[in-house]
Image 1 (tube, rainbow, N blue to C red):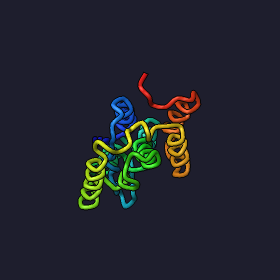
Image 2 (image 1 turned 90 degrees about the horizontal axis):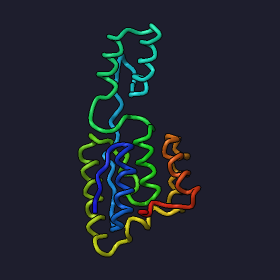
Image 3 (image 1 turned 135 degrees about the vertical axis):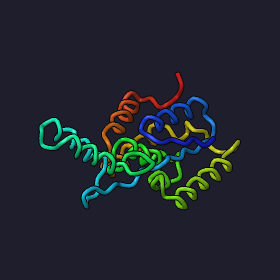
Image 4 (image 1 turned 90 degrees about the vertical axis):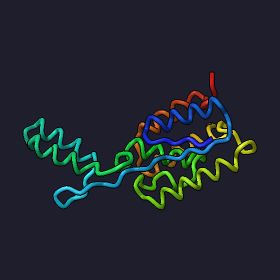
Length: 176
């Protein structure tokens, strides 16, 4: 099975579904968007969040916010930055159910992203019927490895909190 995911909600959803079916699988993350440019600076959705506060304080106009919004998210992919979605891509790599490094190739990277999709498809096909099932990648050791990777990359604490809760109770993603 090959699961295509693209945000912080679909990564854990795919892992839960894969744990339920427990068949050999590979997950391919759609990738982040590239950062935008506005008034000569690199901008991401982070600056948009900050600009919302500036508008509320009267330090910026609604027109400036609208202009920034149009430039901060210039194309396909998840928010540019080590926010929860891209953090979950790192977690996929660390768990071992994705081709390492392919998730963070930008969504619009054309040739590179197509090559990543081909690698994931070939790996999924080679695992069909004979590879380790999905739950083999979702045990305590794998979750601890993902927590270490998320921490090392300065990722979102959302990933760490969810994984910590599962490992603290001594459980993994087995179906009930």
